[in-house]
Image (cartoon, rainbow, N blue to C red):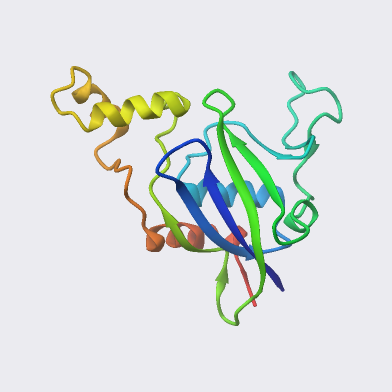
Length: 188
């Protein structure tokens, strides 16, 4: 099995929210979407697409997309859209908030015996809460949450949830969530 080491970063947010993931090069874009939802911490409430040059891959919406405008992601593997180290694609989640992720193939690595993939090996910070209003809304949320005297502090604290911590990152928890999704797993 050929494995990819992929770097995923959420664009336009500082400090960077990112993950480094190892997974099979034959992972389909449909599977990769589900993996990204888990490793980044999204809840899969919204539409998504992968952008590769001028091509768009995802789940075509007959009400909005012309026939052929969006390529069905089910049978497209990562090896097709990330053919060599250094290749990059964009993953967009939630077209309203427009969360854009840069996905880069860092290197092709041998799969290790007895290791279950996909596997997150590094990362930093939590993703914004769902429906936080894009980059500007998220920046506003963070400003409010660091100031307990802010007039909106209590409401925004409740909305974001007691467990939300922008700096939190747990390899163990993310990998545990990946293991619970057996349909995404592969082992050498």
